Length: 97
Image (cartoon, rainbow, N blue to C red):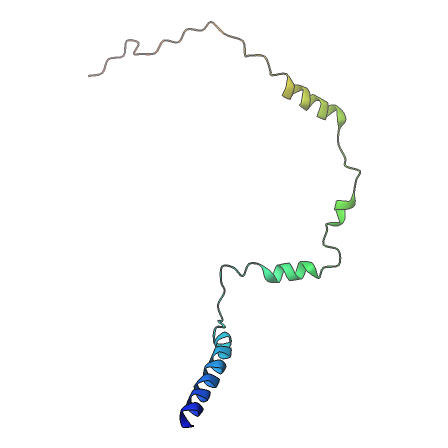
């Protein structure tokens, strides 16, 4: 009977030790998987998270300027004019001792 009691005590203590393992694995440090949970929770509790100006559908713009930009994009500018200029590189009568 004492052997059965011993097995029962060992079984009971091992079951209780298994429950305590999760409690002992709590750490006071940050991990790489923690992320920005405080900011995420703050945004979840915000009543209107969007910018107030995001509902403005009347976007100011200049149509003529936009057309000019598109035209310059489609048609490349002409090449710069060529000049017939001669550049002499070298010493022109300067001698070094």
